[in-house]
Image (cartoon, rainbow, N blue to C red; front, side, top):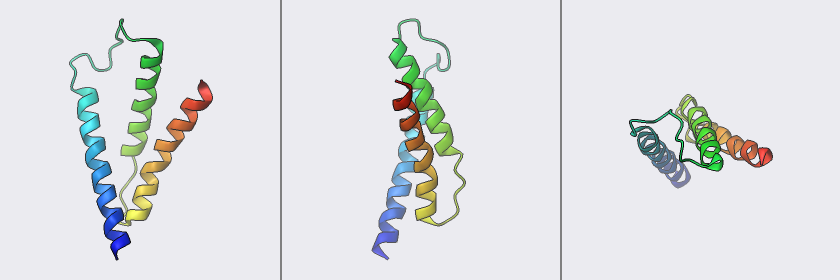
Length: 87
């Protein structure tokens, strides 16, 4: 029971964090436009984060906190693996 509550709390916290991060990433009026002052690293990192965020948000909730958490973490970790292998 405590494990389910803990995982549910972690899932809710993660979703709120993602929502706030999305708001922060896209609140800028120039979001999506190339930044001429950004380094190549910054540009690539933001592109990778946008792909990862989209994959995490595409996970359909099932009501099972373990499955929902795993469904969101898979694209998160795939993004890290793809980023690491490309550099």
